[in-house]
Image (cartoon, rainbow, N blue to C red; front, side, top):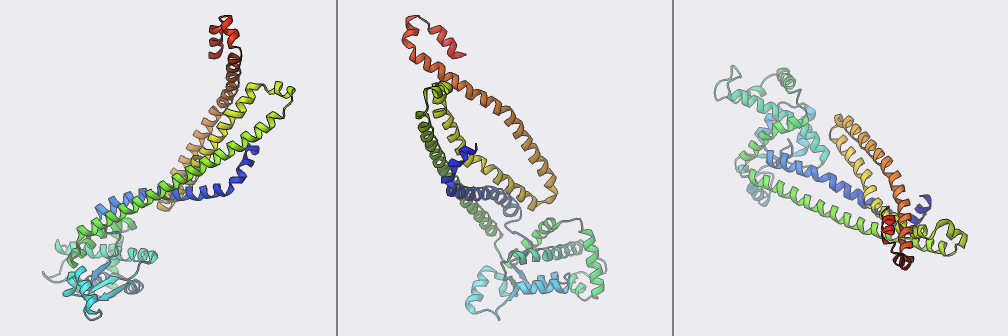
Length: 381
């Protein structure tokens, strides 16, 4: 095997390029399921609303949310939202924003002014908790479950006037009830409130949903195309590497064989030398192509898949560990069964060449003595 590996040296750059392309292909293949799940979860179930961070929100609604935030959280929200109204926008900017958000004519809005992922993740934690609290209080108020509140009075204007200690106590009680919900559940619970807020602002939810689905679909097509191109290039390079190794091996084997003495020819046999010059080299060439296209790709895809799962949910690590061990055991068993049989087949190919060659050389003699049946039986064996 080490002797064969030296024939890969001229193709070192090609192999490095192949590994790079296989990493790209694996990344693309592992990304597609995420896009599929996002189309279902976000695009269909959540109407295209990605998280609990509204891109735009009415001033009065944001004030409600801030009742249930501490000073640090309020600073974080104020830092990432910009107040938009007729006074702080030019006429052109105002007209443009009114087309998008019709309610801006009657009341000011706060608009998200950051695209930073870390900032949005942080805001998502803050806003989701506040939205769940506000939604819960609004639902309880509508059902008449909050006592001592006169009909028609805004519950939040009452809460806002309460002492901070009482608000903190109320917040703590709500937190205890929602403590079992993880971040994803809190986000999903707050999506309905954001949807209602968008409808109140005048945003077309159906258009928002369709835009998200079409953008995700276009991204999937682009990723699939990149993966396809990477696969084609890897196949092309793999075929060239395999053909190059086959060419070099045949040249060296031929040079070696023509330098043999008669004693060496008798030792190896002509049939065996034919097998080595044709079938064996063809097997190495095919293995090289398979190695470049599949064997190199399998561990890259496996490692990428494990990292993807661990980043998604670390509690699944033991399942991945069991699966990897099981796959390794299956591979070891298959190789232990296949390799001895493969060696046996290679020896039988030598015999097949020997018998075929003898039949061709002695064809006239076989016909002269009507020995065809014996030779057919010998060939079958």
